[in-house]
Figure: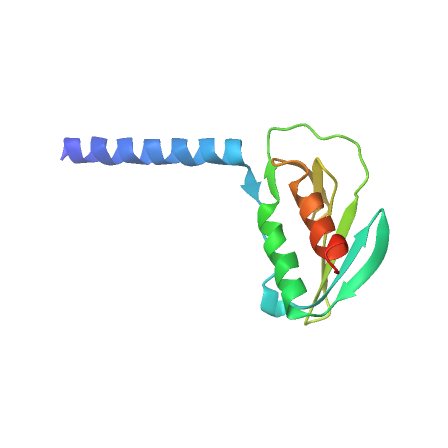
Length: 134
């Protein structure tokens, strides 16, 4: 019985260690992101381009999917920058969820967090919504 308990403790320790290291290296995904079915439209604002509003299902799906690339590092320091891109997700119930980002920082639920994979989110949003007949 002692061997079983030690074995389970070892497996638990290794699992917790690996998950913790993965979160520190790859970053923590944003929590509370909207489901595509709940979003009625998106409003995309970019510091270098005009504001666009989209109600098409494919654009909404892309905007929701892009949130999956916003992982933040709990240990990285923040810089005092201004957002480059802002996406407002207008929900079916009338509420709004807003995400803002620049190359190094994401603002989510009113909190600034350091992005793990810098530049990716801003480049993707710019390409999808402004450079590809968006």
